[in-house]
Structures are given as C-alpha cells and as structure tokens.
Length: 128
Image 1 (cartoon, rainbow, N blue to C red):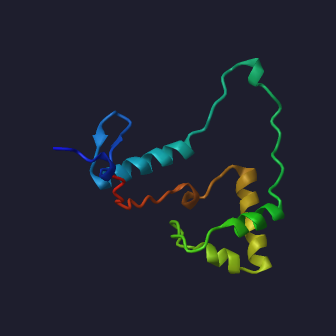
Image 2: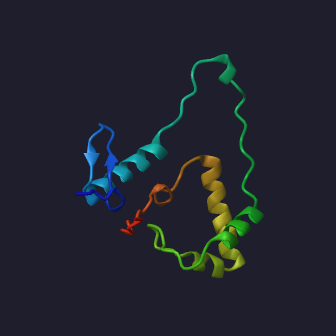
Image 3: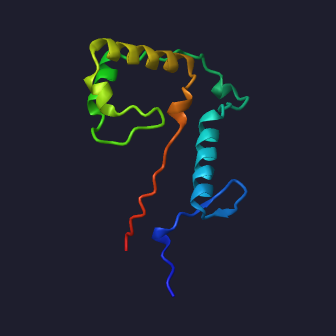
C-alpha cells in the first residue's frame, strides 16, 4: 500500500506535533503568520549595531501606481474582499488615498491586521 503525501496537508506546530487535519493545519499557519509579523526584532547590545536610526524615505506615488498596474486580474480577494480590478478601476483620488495609507503604515511601522493575514486555499491537486 502506498501513501500519497502530495494529497495530504502535513505541518508541524511549534511544539513539534504533526498536524494533518485541514482545520488544524490552517490554524497552525494562522498562528505562525501572526507570530511572524507580531514579533519585534531586537538587536544585541553590541556597538556594531548602534547606528543612527534613519527614517526611510516615503513611498513614491509612482511606486503605488506601478504596484496597482502589476496586480493580476481574476484573482481571489484577500480578507478585505477587495479584488485587484477595484484598484485598477479607481480614480486618481483612490490612488492618492492608497498612497497616503501606504505611507502612514510605512513610516509608522504599524501594519493593518488584514495585511498580515493570509488565506490558504488547498486545491487538492494530485501531482502524481
């Protein structure tokens, strides 16, 4: 009897326990992603790391315009339920508002909760 790993969802949690139930796998991924983006990285007390903290330059409007143009059509929306086509069809005012929001987040380092959430959809494709 052969066991087809390609058709199974398998993941280890933080404690090393193997999870195979779809809901447990999804929950493990959710916890991992939340922890990944919630942790503050601390530098060691070492003079080599004591550098002047410089503010990053703000995001350019052209960068936002280019990012919107690069969005792919006909893709599933994220947790906010907004599809790429909405951004592409938006006016200059919409683009400017997105630009302002991105800069507020960039300069404050405070991410929106929806931006750190991921939705994984297991397609169940058999690769054999």
